[in-house]
Image (cartoon, rainbow, N blue to C red; front, side):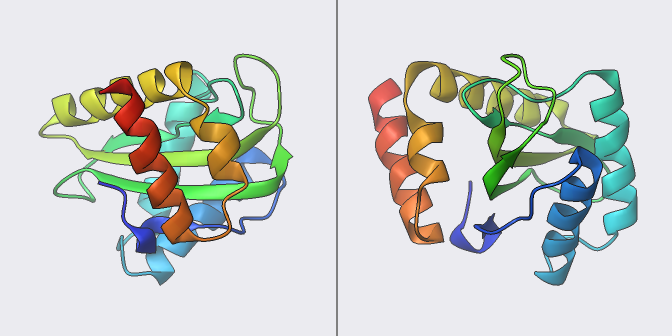
Length: 149
């Protein structure tokens, strides 16, 4: 579900809210979303409930919104890393953003479960954070997904 034009390799490090703002702004600039203010507000509300920072350098910011018809995945790499209040308290280098439609929350849950399994069972994060191109990111994800079946 993740396409090359949904991958951003050069997000700036900084405060979590500012990084999410830049990420959502990039989605808007790319024509992937219409109202970045609504989506940013929804993502930040979700983060206020509990951080979506996992471990091993990845966070999975996500929200259910009426701004998308079907799930949208986007990935960003922050080369310098950022403090994201992750479970292991280590820097976060990869953001995998998931926007799900409010009418079908089950699709987002399946994606989240798959991502958690991929992170837990493979070395995907370490490989992705060092990828040189969006094409490389997609190839790495395909290869690592093949390991979990």
